Image (tube, rainbow, N blue to C red; front, side, top):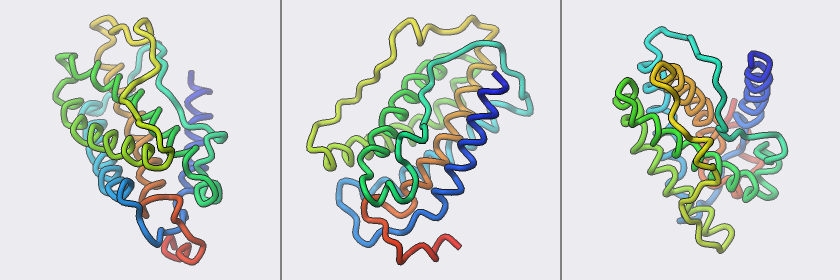
Length: 200
């Protein structure tokens, strides 16, 4: 598990380094205009919830989840975002739906509800804005659905609740960093080379 986390952390750092210089957009499509503020708000709320839920405790039980990941093949690098942003934006929406399912689950834990409930409004706002943006880009109505089986989301035993809460909120915070970087300048399809200096 440590190797998987280390691999994910390394990939995340690479993605953040690449996305941190994603050029700014010229014009925003109305459907995607709210993504910047809602992705930044999710990042802020996820960071607060993660820190407060952990309260100095870094322990995590040996359990697995089916939390979705962003991968290199999802084309969230700056060049791919300029060429065809719909692949990355669609994957971010899928991952966001996955996190929504898990945040709903942990919000029912007595030990976690106050932290999960802090992040839920920002998560729901970003999910709404993402669905609207993806619908505008693809021309298809994006229903709020998730592809997680019920056996994958069975609540953990009560002694796993606190570590599961920390695990979920820490990974949501990490994901929120990526989504905030991708949408920092609005619709990634309208990023341009001329605005790269704004990253420096």
